[in-house]
Image 1 (cartoon, rainbow, N blue to C red):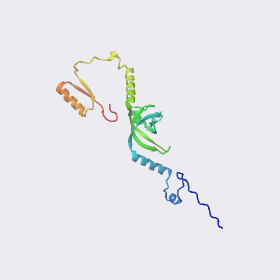
Image 2: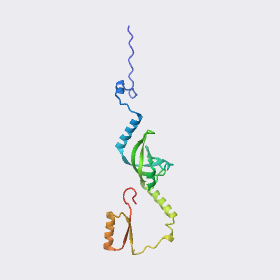
Image 3: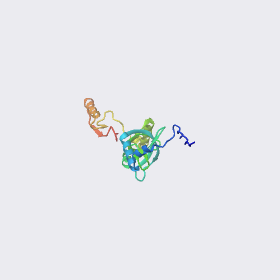
Image 4: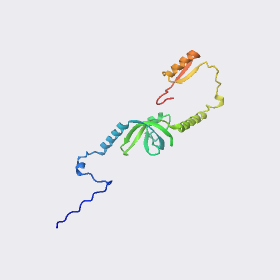
Length: 202
């Protein structure tokens, strides 16, 4: 009686099974660098620039290079972040451990570590607590300069001879202010130009 080989056991569902040689033979071959570059393009094209809210964790910087590194986290995940030296120098809100922030930046990959990160372009406090902490910090700095000292305070005149306005010199606000003053209380006006929208706004 001829020997019959035993039937091959069917692997249970959920287990990894090797692909057929036919599929393997038709799969494209990648170099590590080419695949990393393709993943980078795919991620950047899919997301581009984003606004991301999270708590700063693991802050390291600025390093000797002038760059700063940290992670942004919430209750479920974290994303690595980097601020280049040129950007870090002009940020009004500097990154600090534990601070909740809202950042704008570009999502990209770092092939050397097989990871992704956000390259931060701008940063501002997020939430009432962060704004209050920033306000208290500014008050301490101004107090240290003696700007709140009673002897430096000047009496406010009942009717000012000159009026100063800090705003955009080209916006609708200053035009409305000048129009109202001309109608009701003509006085010389000094305009101190500042940005009122976007990065660097007052």
